Image 1: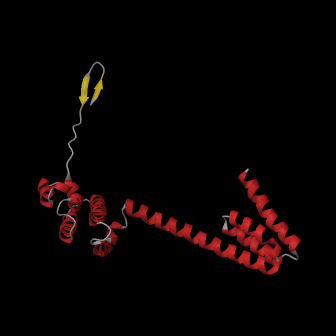
Image 2: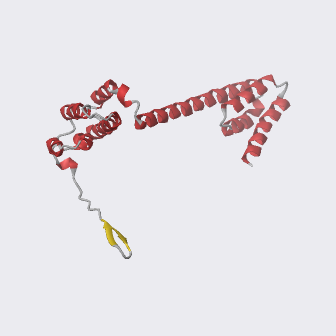
Image 3: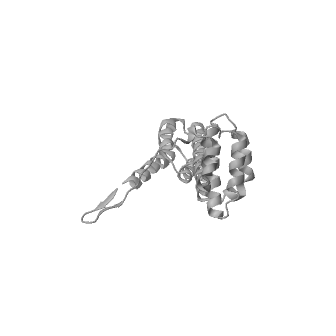
Length: 196
């Protein structure tokens, strides 16, 4: 309730909980509001292909393209929740793929795609770091075994593939163990300076 001094009550909202999971899909359909169609998979009888197909077909009748895409995205996400981990997920993935051209343009789908791309980039970066660390370990072990502990410590603290690759190159070209030690210690100093 919103009340303004001297004027009184100007706005009141009354909310009533509706337990969709206790309703049948037809109960939701009878209301006749397209915005409720995505809830069909969450109804008592909704976690099945027939209801999801019915929901998709009904939502595809919505004329407003933005609303249609949003309703489809929400409906398929609710269906995925309703089906659970086992359920009909494979069927839902195939069905979603058939609608992919439409749904891939929704803001939610674009956000999910961006999350996937970011995760792939992080994973690729970690793999690249691991390869460079392994290369450094191999070179140090072969050329300067006395520096293994220092090299492992320095390599573990480097989180930039370009920096560790440069270190690998410098260690490869080092004339002797003292020069290699210098490169390893310089790497640590550069990191400390950046942290400050």
